[in-house]
Length: 213
Length: 213
Image (cartoon, rainbow over all chains, first blue to last red; front, top):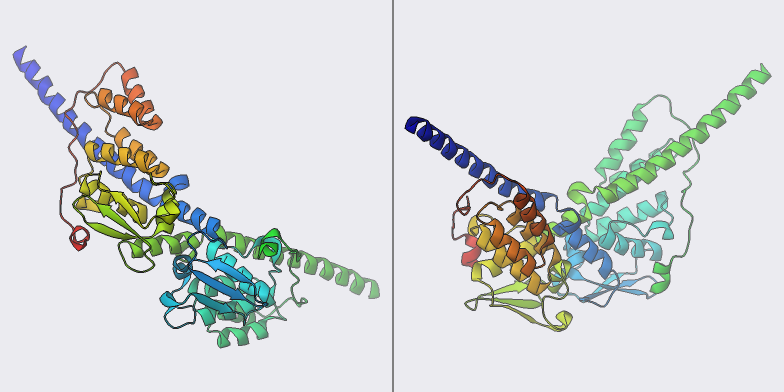
């Protein structure tokens, strides 16, 4: 009887140890999961919401972005710097104004929208090839790598028999490797469907956003 | 022969239209995908990297956080505000100093690390129940909802026969519903494994991070 109790006790100790290990593992995983995939309350969601909320607001604003026509956007260097810390100016950290008046107004505005929201302002701009070409040029000048790639991906969906040659030329001018690859892929095919220049499915529409500034 | 050519022509028109629709759809999806799942170059990744890079640096810093013992951290209101825009002070937007000297030093430091990285500084702190209880208290005082939830989830993995009653009491004190639910779940069970207070698997270790400030 005594031996049995001792055996049971030993087994209990083992189980307790195993249980403790499992719980410790659970705690570690819980922490990892919270970090990697924070969902509604994760850091990336919190920061994205914050950036989107701060677009063109006074709160924490420390730099003005001037657009064509003299319109300006109240901006935040920290958010701008998340996309690029050069912006085509010397000493980005110390400027209090960024001049984007070389860009078409809708392109400059959409560029700022992209910086704050990863989107170009929805239906407020016509997302056609000309838009993305101008945007790619802006991305090159301001040294915004993520935007440069984004524009190439968008243009790559518009490569056809008619646009191909022009896009290929542009891809060399703007050092756009992804676009170049996609143009060359089309050129490599024997049969090419001949289509007119792609018309965007988006209608130009003045949004509240545009009216605000 | 003429009729055949006409038929083929009609078919070609149909195919062209279909092709155009597909391409338009592709362009839309490409844009959506870039926005929703930007990967390496998406906004959320860009912002997270930026926040992590800015922890305790002068760049763009506009507020000092004072920790117990007089140590301070160079902070950024915009990043702090992503986790909460109250921080237990009046007019958070206009303060240039946040006093966290009421918190244990390691708790205050880990809190700041969490704000910038969604993590508590890895092995620099002992992630045991006392740590998460103090952190939950801090989250309540500073009104940091995401941190409050995070601490409850961590503590929920540590609920056992010995901690249960204490955690349940704390959960009421700190309005911690998730923790409360988990304690009540355990109390509802008939068999409860009796274990000593959980010892953390993390060793206390002074990291470079801590030495820097």
